[in-house]
Length: 153
Length: 254
Image 1 (cartoon, chains in turn red, cyan):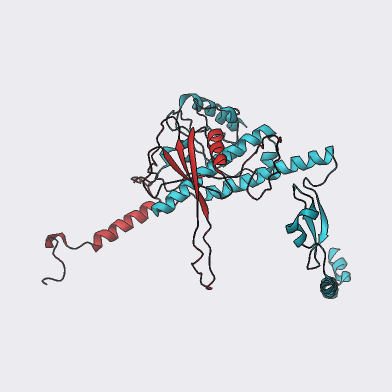
Image 2 (tube, rainbow over the protein chains, first blue to last red):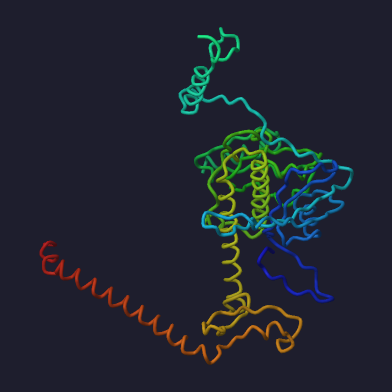
């Protein structure tokens, strides 16, 4: 089911609880500290458990999971806004998932540098040209050979 | 319709040829989505019907066996580094009501994976201190999911009403809280009866005697405001009638 929904009580002999249409969202994050090659780091909602993460990844993404470890990251309540009220940054849970079958994962570079070719006559192209001209004007005279304006005439 | 049929055919061809996407920005609700979620070496049980009108990202099929699952947390490699990524309109409730329950179930997971991908992108953009390409996609997905929820709830409600006559799925009753306000209390499941539940007993569902005068006062306030509103309406109508009498209105008609 989801967050903010009350799960039915479990008593011995009850059938396995099935969750249809989960509302849990997993965010893959780049690890802050160096992690072993088979470890993937996720930010998960606070209500999720290790078993939830394992089932989620196995059933929805078919990722073989060997182990899951979680911790809760407490975020600050110290920051204050313009009204001097304390603003809480929401807490989150971090899951370290180790992949099975000796698979490895390296967080890719999602923002590579790309040469942008704007179409003719578009606003972006004009802006780019303008910026280029500005930069050319700001540059010093190349005949001075890198000497600053402080020296000489 | 022919456009839809044509685009469906191309979608089918795409699945088997692994051709790059064709993104259509305007009438994308009729463009079928060639799913990236079709991994041939994965269980594709969720994505059998390709005739989804998912107007969001038009993705190509890619079949990869290494890290096949985790790649779904990221966009197509062609879109990495772009400033904007084209995506269509969100699903409306009207469009979703046409779909069967199985289709809606599958669509839910499609939305879920899309949302996960967008959240990953957002977090990575914050980490790299770069703008996220097309952040409106998140809102679109959230709205679509909300509408799907609404449609499913409607169906469940109607089914329950037909089968049992119960208006609500979760039982409850009207109760007064400590402040004298009447509210709908929804029941919870407990393993023990209420008279053994000390925490429940501390939550009083009756107003103490010293609160009764305030209940009366708030009721009087509410009635007063209601009557004042009605009187104000009547006064307004009267002044309007005085400004625009019926005689001149009838005269202008002729």
